[in-house]
Amino acid sequence: MRALSEAQFRAATEGGVPDPEQVDVRPDGTELWSVAVPMPDSLLAYTLTAVLVAASGEITVVDPGWETPETHAHLDAAFARIARDPADIAHIVVTHAHPDHLGSAEALRRATGARLLMHEREQLAVDRVRALAVAPAGVGGDPATGGEVGGAVGVGAGGAGGEADGGAGGGGAGGGGAGVAGGGAGGEARAAAAAVVARWGVPDAEREGLTAQFARSRSNLTLAQPAEVLLHDGDVLPIDGAVWRVLHSPGHTSGHICLIDDERRLILTGDHVLPTVFPGVGLGIDRRLGGAEDDDPIAEYLAALERLVPYDDYDALPGHGYRFTGLGERRRATAEHLLKRAREVGAVLAREPDASIWRIAAQLSWSAGWDRLSGGPMLASALLQTGLHVRFVRGGGLARG
Image 1: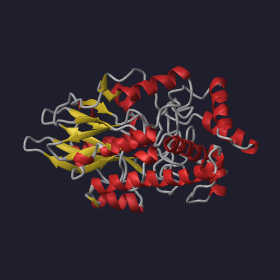
Image 2: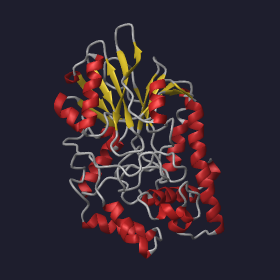
Image 3: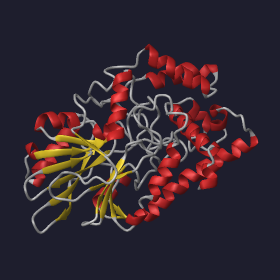
């Protein structure tokens, strides 16, 4: 894997927010830009927003970032650099419904009249959260390696979502907006969270704090209206300037998408594959109870990684970090990371077939150590990811892998 942007690589590895940069320009004048917008209180410093400026003047924005004044200031500065008027934004595409990607979409939509496009499964998740009046899942970091984008359910919203080990984005901040739930989970949601905590076998001393993590509302995913365009696998976006084809890539969230550009030989990966961290899995904003008993986000994610094989030699424009080449190498490393954790969970289950999620998690390797993790804000994420791996292993996932 090799960085395609020195400035973005330096910012991702040393800190800071890089300047906007042109990725591609076509003979007709169509331009593709990569614009970094800051993420508040996150170990991941920024979201990479793609801005496509068609020769017709029509503008498409992908993943506009958090709803904060800083986001809008960076976008305004980027449009000044590009010498374009934000009023020309016609389409806002989101790869998935996390606040660091979708957050500012509603404000942009109101300001410009642009259409919002997202996968129908993400829209269903947003609708479900609103209907249940529960706080969305947070997006924190992976506890296993300290280098994964991850999110605990209800534990902040500061990254791309992942397991719980000090990963990128742990412990995010609200960053404006009322939240899909409109300001906090009700008693029903708290009771549901308490039931999950009990089912995980969490000791009594930890239950109250962990339940509070689940019930905390710290997101900014307000959408006044549903997306105007609901996307499906294989759809070609109705935009000017590029032929972008939707590749449904579930796992990180159920309706996550990548965008394939065969002409430019590039892929916008969102949080499906990232250059500096491993994305967390099963982090849809509606996963208040860890999902349905029969779903398997890890199996879905591994299958979706395999769907990228035809594009292994395409340039990658990810949702965080830096543009890179070597997608195949990174894709394989990402899959191996998940399978390694699954094998570790499988070893514990072989010794203790009836062990609780808490008991299993306590025997896994965490970069900060279990003792520190079990008393910290990423505990919910650690248990959520452990539970998903248990489901994967018990469902025969290792044999299939």
